[in-house]
Length: 130
Image 1 (spheres, rainbow, N blue to C red):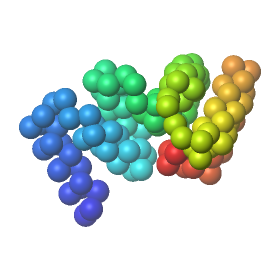
Image 2 (image 1 turned 90 degrees about the vertical axis):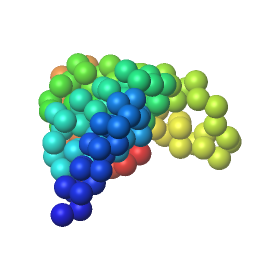
Image 3 (image 1 turned 45 degrees about the vertical axis):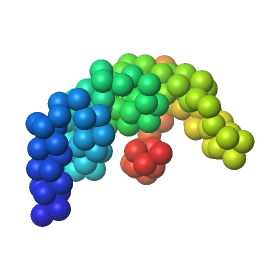
Image 4 (image 1 turned 180 degrees about the vertical axis):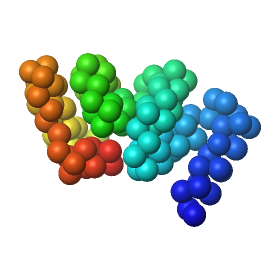
C-alpha cells in the first residue's frame, strides 16, 4: 500500500543520510496521519535536534503531543512555535495569517494552562496541516 511504500522510502533515505531533515519531517507527518503519534513525536524531535529553527515542526509535534495527552509538552512546543513565527521574516500578505496562527496558539496555551483541552478532532486535524 502507499503508506508502506512511502515509509520504506523514507526509512531508506534516513539510512543513507541520518541528517536528512526533510525525511524525518515527512516520516513524522506520515506517522501522524496513520495515528502513530509516538513515532511522529520521535521524528519531529529529531528534526528539532538537527534544525531547531523550523516553526512548523514545533506545531506538528505539539499537535502529536496533544493526541498523546501531554499538555505540558504541548504548551512548550506551541510557545516555541509562536516565538519562531514572531521572529520570522514574512511578506505583508502573510502577516494576517501569522497573526491568526499566533492568536490561536495563545488561546490553546491558555486553555492548556487551565488543564482544559482546547482540541476536538477537527481542530487537531486542521492544526496538523498548517
